[in-house]
Image (tube, rainbow, N blue to C red):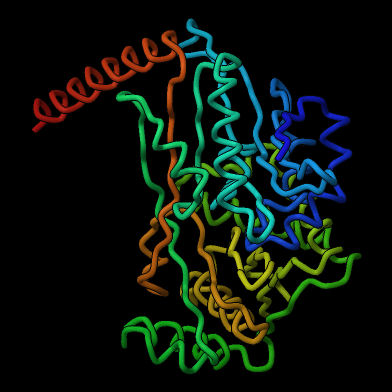
Length: 372
């Protein structure tokens, strides 16, 4: 194979057709590795970043066998110390999960080994490798970890998921009695008190997308406000990104966007993606004034039913170990986050940060003890 780093935006754009074909013919079912997701992310969040996308091509005919969607950016620690970081094309705002390289079926081992070798042969180009939200089963990640220096940091992110059954009834029968009771009780109460006025519907018409996406944003912010939590939806650039993704995924048939209305008033919304057998729950929102009917639970139940009806094999809750997710499942994927210094300078920064965090933790512990 011939390995090359694509470092210019126009070269990146030229990969579109090959990228789509490679992912389609790979064993990956991750919607967050699609050209639509990553190119849109780059369009919205590339400021201060340079693409460093690795391509693996067969030497004899130039066929694309692998892609590593990476970029390089300069970061600053404590507003003083600057360092260069190699990472996946992602950020915490957009919240993609299970990130990895893309390999043609049957070429996974060769591509992963070639990419890791190339990365470490060129490590003088950055000071730090940081791979957040990487798929735990990734061969690429495992080979990277085999080279870790003593001060590398590794953490894990819980991503609960449902292993779906053939029918909704069979899925319900596998839940605890209390969880099953709550799902059915609130839905029955809502339909009883508002007969013929409760509707669940999928946003399918293009003309409805913009209006209902705005409704979704509003419901999400209402939910976060009621919980007294900050929302990433306060970031205008993220809202632009999601609006673009909603339109592109809709065009490809990957968007499963559901609204719960009562008396024609939207009280809950859930944004899901369905790609190659995986139904991913991206975000939801609901009106807190309807909390007695648990609208968030109801719209989630509807989405799970639709995932089953559409033949999905998994319903992904994605990152976060919020307690409510464990009412639906006890299964977890663990994404991995690694930060690995690759230069003497970054190793020194790592040690400084560890010392600072240790002092900070000790101070906070002493404050809490004094308050007791």
